[in-house]
Picture 1 (cartoon, rainbow, N blue to C red):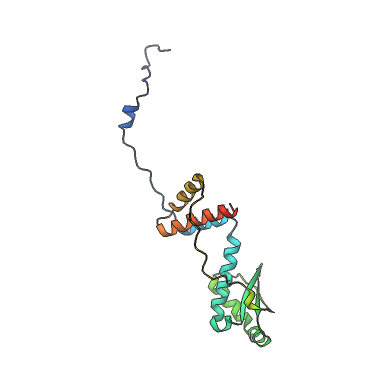
Picture 2 (tube, helix red, strand yellow):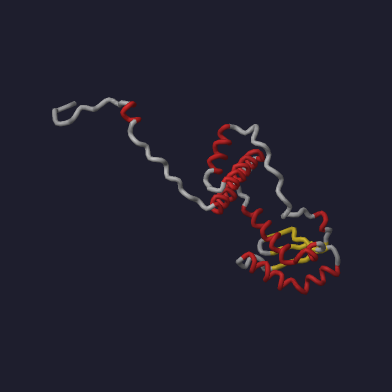
Length: 179
């Protein structure tokens, strides 16, 4: 109803609307660390990453010579279990265990370990956590929706190489059923 006081509605004119300037979408800068943290949390992978970080820190603290005879292999709560290949190395490390624990906690930046437990074991059967990860699988076979999500995740960071790594990690998690 038009009582004379209101202007009549104009029909939608697509040609007129397309001439209006469109402002570019503002890109929000995100720290790579927060993107990776969110990704790992969503995939329930943070505990494995934390465990690997503790193992690598322990191995860095003990040094290359000692690492040939001792290897961290289990983290339960704040207790780190280390396999040692001989009784003499186990005894030697038992004298250093408090100092090693303190150094690992300092490098990690918080009081993570309360106990380092030494056990006799064959360290050659324990896999290296700091070995280079396998190369990502090719992208073929991914669904278009998965590629779109991977592309979006990769574009959240400015560093193109890191974006590619994040995209591949997402697609790898999809393939293995962790998403």
